[in-house]
Image (cartoon, rainbow, N blue to C red; front, side):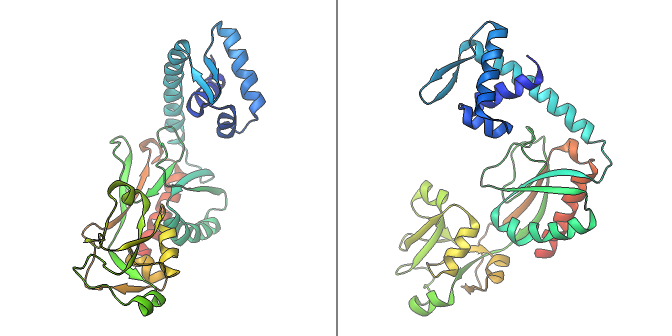
Length: 290
């Protein structure tokens, strides 16, 4: 099995459908199916069982998947080490981040970066998922969650206080909540994963048990827009609430846990000129934001 076949085999093993594997690899479904069939013929064994809902690895396929994964690890390690010696300020840098940070900070910074380094292209992906830097799904990640992987290079870029905000329209209709009443008589907007875990959540460390959840959203930018539309009260970093022209409620109170922003990259890429340039540029932009 050569490396090109291994990449295709791994993609189908992970995605379980021809369409998913084709999307990841940037080829058509027929190519994936044809090459898998040729691979099985060359190896003299079935690697996948065709089920109604996709492709399932056989016992032989499980063994092959482990071997192909080791090939991938070695290939990516070699690529990272070689790119770590790259002094050229040109090429593609893949970045992943959250929606609010991308729109407020990274895209404006990209315009200035483009003027200074016109041969560097930034491919920016906004997602709530933590992409795998070890598998080179991204070169840089700028997120509000610190990764647990000790092998990654991690640097805190910002630490923003978090406050409670509402729109002028909402406060005109409903008034301010009374501290200690757990938002009785008020609508609140929350982060959906937090709501799904416990049913209620806190806003600037005040329980929301007596409040009514007006919206449960899975992204910070959606929460900001929901508050601006007058749906209810929500907490967010002060820089976001002020930027959006929202009214800060209980200005004397902030959440105990701050909103930290982390830069994450594979350590082998720290010496790659284009990656380092983009990382430094975004780090300065985030520092200016706070």
